[in-house]
Image 1 (tube, one colour):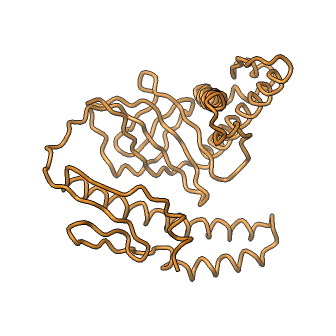
Image 2 (tube, one colour):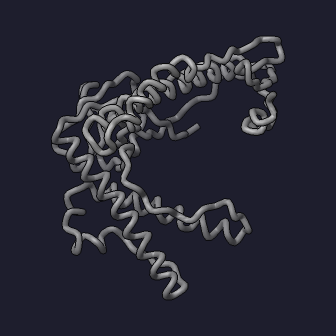
Length: 283
């Protein structure tokens, strides 16, 4: 069975590479916003959808030529998808589909580029090669990508903590596992993470509670800093690192529990619940 599978790695760009990424993040955000603005303006004036491309803006905005054109093309595809989804859902009567919003300048940013004849590659399990960037980026290659699979794209991202990551999308043939006849029902809880029909109880590790004291201290420190100062941004980054650790702990725990359940059971039955409502009704 041919499926798309993503592999995420930590990367360690040099100062020059960070500058290139910052430029690309900015250009991707700029082209998305300016194309959205022109689409809205054109629709208001003519009632028709404007078909614009990044190439139309490069003559007026020379800085767009400095970054990966594939990143700009992917920004265009994302905008067109969001734009068409809005009008399609409106015709269906679905008012929950929001209109595309302008992208704000934020610390956590990303862009996606495509592999064209080996422009994306892992070299010696130590370096990452991507389009438009001549120098290779140091990578922590902790998961092996099979040699026979094809690399489709790479998404470079910068987290709020300041760390850089790459998600490499692959296309590979995955054979289904041998089916087990075991069945299990899962009852999600609040005090416990979940209870299984075989009377197994999965505990709630409450990672946020473990780091709560440190988070509160950093939040108090942040409130005393002058907004916009160097100390303010240093403290904000420390707080982001703690929150990132809690999020990673939750995700790791979820993956381990779900993988174990999937490996051991053929059928999994779970209730359709709204956790927010359960918490509101909890005494």
